[in-house]
Image 1 (cartoon, each protein chain N blue to C red):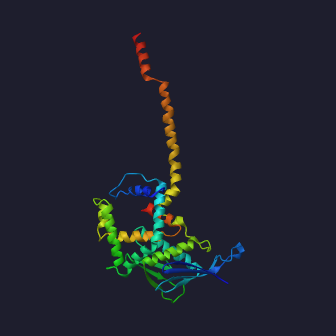
Image 2: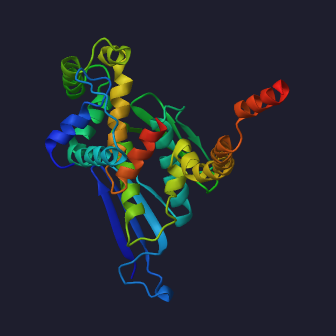
Image 3: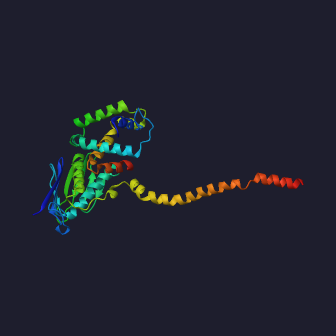
Length: 126
Length: 195
């Protein structure tokens, strides 16, 4: 990844985004994105852990989890194509709990040195 | 004097106690012969055992975490340990003692403790100072990837020779167009008939 603009451009290859551009991601770019995700997860692990923990202790009214979920929905509303059925599912608060928790667990499991390989395997199996 | 190595991740710590294998010319701080291990989680009873229990317990956690992420039913059962999900946030672990008349230890841990435990095991797996039976990354690799890695070459070898044969046959036979022209042949026949 030569610069942040490249990352921004590759981000637009996500078909769920409003600014979707039909670009084929090269294998090197995919690897780089996975590595960035793993490094970000390492850095944000304490926060990810707190979000997960807050839901365990108080499953109905967890303040930290609710804040996270609210921000997550705000970002999706802002940046994703709301006409897509998959995006509609992500926006539905009754259905998106499982997706959010599983995504957080996935990130929290991939913070080791071999996290890159783990995440890659998981994504290929998705 | 035994060596002690600890791996920490937030609320979980894993302690490995053992000796180096001097017959292999290992360093003093290395652990190859594990005599004991302890897994402690905050607010939970201490889990400890011998070397023969460590591998199966690590396998159980890795297997269970894979099931959890792959949206399959998260249940793992064995002679030593059972793990199943109570709900999306809580996991129930049943540790069975190998000694008779000892009740199994039941633990309920959340996603945060589960991920801390997995990360401790990852640190142990990646450590160069402890020699344990490493968890096979291929075993953890998803089926599709394994299929891709093992069978891609086989499929390539199976399909490529006939494909090359057909292509070369087409290319070779196309050159005969210049040697034989059925139209010209017809014209010649017509001239003969006129005569």
